[in-house]
Amino acid sequence: MVELNREQQVTLLKLSRRTISAALSLEFDSGELDLGDEIFTTRCGAFVTLHISGKLRGCIGNIIGVKPIPETIVEMSKSSAFKDPRFKPLTRDEFPLIDIEISILSPIEVLKDPGEIVVGRDGLIISRGYNSGLLLPQVPVEQGWDRNTFLEHTCYKAGLPAHAWKLEGTKIEKFSAQVFGEKGLGLI
Image (tube, rainbow, N blue to C red):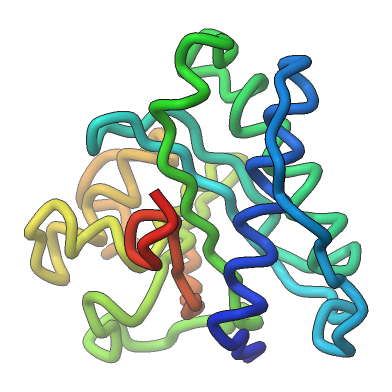
């Protein structure tokens, strides 16, 4: 799994904020962003999550890396702010209120035994037929869920009944993520 240092994390968070501000035709002085580190050529899954006052305001990502990290962050920042179907597009008035969080994903692995899931470390993908749902590793911690509740809510996210994770033919996959945000790093 990719491990970004604090400086690299700050760079990606500034890139995300600059991307969203530019799309809103707002000024944001991110300073000079050095995207030349070798690690930024890595292709891995990533999500950008927006919160306002601790409440979800947008979250979009790719589970598999198809572009270098900075390109993925630019694309997911725009999508999270303006294309999350659960929310209206972010407005200029909301921009100063957002807290940006980025999750850089490890490769995905198929899970044979749900007992191996560690709440707080693992994110989940549950698939059955055409239905698929994903929850990031931080979600069950934020919600105070145990392993079974996490599995049930991932089923709900997939549009499946809570017990679907127990059924033969349901695929459970896990991944981990390096999660960092503006609030946690003291940027806002």
